[in-house]
Length: 313
Length: 313
Image 1 (tube, rainbow over the protein chains, first blue to last red):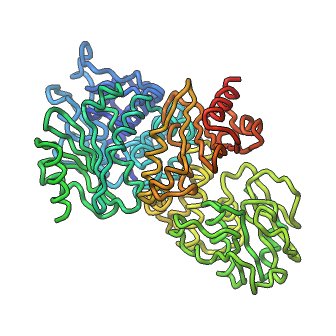
Image 2 (image 1 turned 180 degrees about the vertical axis):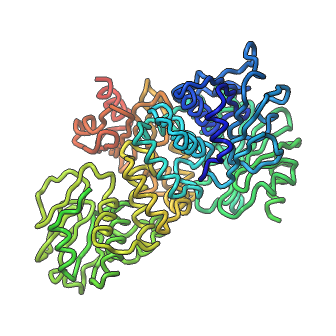
Image 3 (image 1 turned 30 degrees about the vertical axis):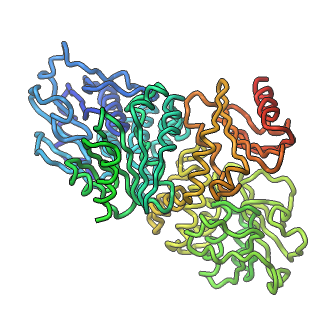
């Protein structure tokens, strides 16, 4: 992976950077942003890290997460150069109303909008974190333990900690360098995977108890009543739809989450070649091949049947 | 990691190897044995791969798993040199009654018995698979896709696919080389983690429904009645005790598995510094710091209380 010369020159020459990422940020967005901020400040630059949404509590183990500000109040963003990470559209970052003198985009999603004076977009990169790693190397900046931890977490979350197909030799070599620089794989994995609240775990058990299997499709349900019973909330259901995938026979796993009466949010996960993005699009949703979603207004029985019927075809 | 010169010379000079590993074999034992057999045969040696127990069905995705023989009938083992992998005592392999002319031990467990004419024991190696990797490199043998797949699976299982603290830079660099040689991380992870039967998953849900949390200790139970209800068996409970560890507050997770009336097998898992091997020893069991077990004759209530009381101290 090669850092574009134009981007390198921009980062070297400019002194004030407004680093931002998408709303509902996850590990790659957060870790990449924090690491880039730390790296640039270590060579004397001024940075601000902005996210419209607050950093979810289970990412507070990331050193430097408190760099994230959720307001642009008093910041005079127009005096900064924008660096947009892990997305390529200012609207995805809640920044559509702010004018920056100059902007760079660093992202591994397919570009859609063409935004940015500099665009470094590598759809083949498994994580934005790995792109930030190469920027830091290219600029000759020292990898501190904190930077390494953030980048390791960023790469870990987008590769399922090296379990997905996007785990290339390069990913593991970068991971090796990050551990050598001080990232602790055990405590990062504990931070990523073993920080559930008891309420969340109780909610998972309730959801698993609703499991219905039809051929190779698993359907589980989370109702608002379950939130009340457990004290957990909708944000706690992240990842629930992955559990039934543990079964060999399951090709598609769906989680129906009640939003209000007869209104459901459906998360789909699939294995291998099964393309759930195509399914979600038929219900006006979207996503990736193996992870997609949509919303549907119907009673639960009808909503389930509609999905199963669509999957049959 | 350095392959001892004596071992290298032995592997080069001899022509007939009886490769064996411990009973109840898991991924490291299996993958290491198969990979070493394939490697030695690729340079014209004769090998036999022996395991007293059959290869569990969920490891049948390993290419070459059918090399394992469960009987020494007609083999004339005494005409072979023994290579004992992932254990260091012939008794652990069910081989105590067979006399080999010469034997080598390759293991990453602490040695106890001093068995073997050649002993290469590296307690710091995260997996025997990584030692076999270095043997193959040292002998100048080509890493085929099948060899790489077996070694990758071996290393993956003993590092939680790079999630445990034993994930060193070296482990990831070896992983990178194995992917470059053809190992497919996505399908290996699917083989390791997504091949549960529906019965096993149903049993997990039943076990989770019994969950009781006392301070930072989680206790779940599997009864014989649950086996009858789900069609799953004791071997399906492997890994169940890890699930409650997902909760941040949990330091110790225990699974009580009913063997017969008022007779329980207890699996303990802990996080960080909590040493469950010490706890298990008090009940005449044993294990490692974060994973141990014991058996207890008592009714369930008494057995649970005894554990909780011991943990308090």
